[in-house]
Length: 159
Image 1 (cartoon, rainbow, N blue to C red):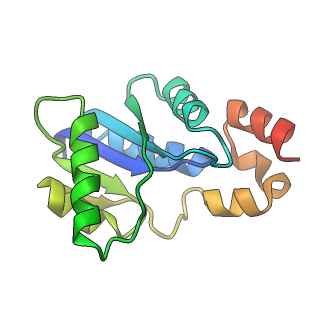
Image 2 (cartoon, rainbow, N blue to C red; image 1 turned 90 degrees about the vertical axis):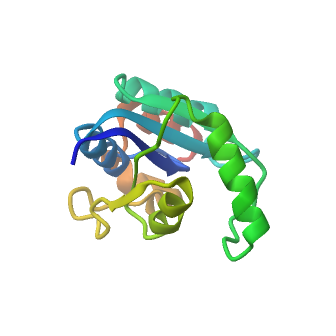
């Protein structure tokens, strides 16, 4: 696969080496990759920092902070419409995305609504066995799975 444009959507709260694995894997398979960092007020790690860290870690990728106050009840069709409107308003290219990458199964419906192909990357998280939930629940146990900038922030703010 070599798609023109790819998209990854996530909270990256906080960004970890598994996220970097997925971003690098996806970037190698498309001409341009966009990473949407979904942010809300009062999240554990401020959204602007998460977007900054990912942009620094992946300088060949377009990282876009997507601030919102939307729920994630995807059984609600009107909520889906709001999400699609938000994502389209933040999309930085004239066409695409052509592929949506994720390690989660929700990617199928998101890709369908964007008219893109869905690609699930390492859903069992074998390449880098970590999740942001694991880090939030026990930050001290997973410092080795964080990029240096995120690790320093976690050590200063969560330990």
